[in-house]
Length: 244
Image (cartoon, rainbow, N blue to C red; front, side, top):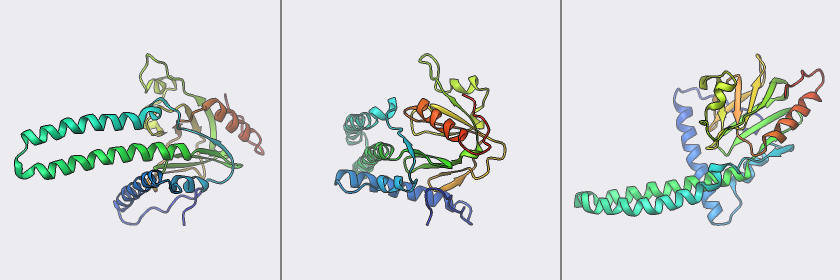
């Protein structure tokens, strides 16, 4: 059984990892939403316990995540009424029932996705343990960075007049240089790994993915996480100093 600190073994069949990951993501999404609506214990709460004890940092107060569910619900309510009317007028009678049903399913899927994502991000936090920093974006992404593999940390400032990618130029990076761990909100903390980065890994939908030397992650309180990780690294025996 895979725990919160061990990456799953890659599948032996090419493409199988993507298929299993997509199926796993759908199962998590529908299960989280169903349990939330029926007031049952949430899968995200059980999932978060895998990361063990440590200092936790939330990631659900971003500007996009704060309005995700109401925005999706309202937009689907309006768009579906308009689209259903268009189908009723423009579609051939023999295809109307199928198109109406398909449109309703897509609308339901969007609402379930928004509710499940918001719920998972509310209960799954980043965790700073004694020896490693575990980063998680709901059920979808999980990354483990041993403290000995972290070289520097930097606060990412987003200016209102600049685009969401403005921080790439400030740090002299290309998009291909960075592993971005974020759902919808722009990352707020940039982590540089050492050249060897022994023991560091990243999975997406449970499938191992290549981890870049730079890791950008969203967290509600980046300054607090920066200070905590920096202090933990400084307390390690023979650890290198972390730049502010």
